[in-house]
Amino acid sequence: MKTIIVCTDFSHNASHAILYAASLANATESRLILFHYFNYPVPATDLPAVFPSVFVDEMAAGFEHRLQEIKTELTRSYPIDIDCKVRSWTLSSDLLEVFQEEQADLVVMGMHGQSAVLNTLIGSATSAAIRRGNLPILVVPHGVVFHPIRKIIFSCDDQTIENTETIKPLLDLAKSFDAYIEVLTLFDLEKTPSLVPQDHLSAAKNSLQVQLAGTRHGYTFENERAVDKGILYEAARSTADMVAMISHHHSFWFNLLNQSKTQKVAAAITLPLLVMGEKVAVLSSSEG
Image (cartoon, rainbow, N blue to C red; front, side, top):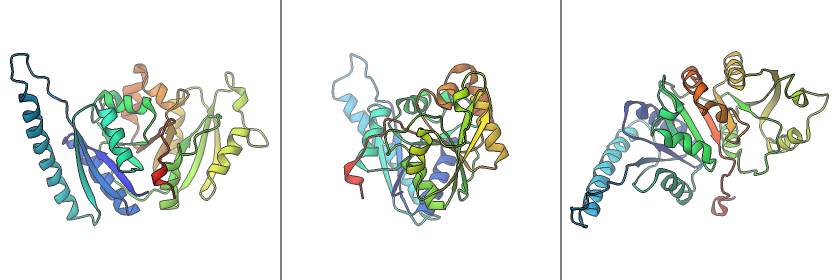
């Protein structure tokens, strides 16, 4: 892991995500990018055409100054390289563009402790980024303090992971901390009997076994109808430090982002959540 982006709206909750990201960057000897997005102002029709660009430039300069202040404060405690980025077009495209330009490995976002994921650090844009599935996002609940990662629960169904870049952030974190990866598969004995563990691993798990080479890992199968409850229970039972999953339509996040379960589950989770993008692009310039 070489570069980490942390998003901030300068809120109190965002400050926790920044501290977590800075600690993670320090532990993994990574570069940290402070990223702020602001809405592009829409002028009234009777205003001069020059007004928007001047106003936007002033706003951007102000936000850049605030990021520089955060950078100065962080460098007093963390001996890491820190850069600042301010954008104002659309959060999804701007964040993806910066991610690709900087050849980043991970995006860190904060989350309110008792709020729904749809009301995270930058509002519904966070859930939209997760649904879009083209960036690896680490969601940090309010109040979570960084400590070395010893165990990661990887909630994974029985589908083959076609894009090997998808789980790269998981592998990077596991190898950086020599963390144990517990591959958790939840099944409903009545609805998905095909997921009941057999004497041998399935074809999908055998494929995953190859991708997890070089890490300490194992497999757990639990009979649980409610995916959200199963993950919460296993996370608490196993004293994990992080939960990881892939943002495809079978995942926990699909259920979580459906409104009926969102607030209940988001308020209950107290672990960092690594949501890996199923559609993450392969950056040839970062290979090797």
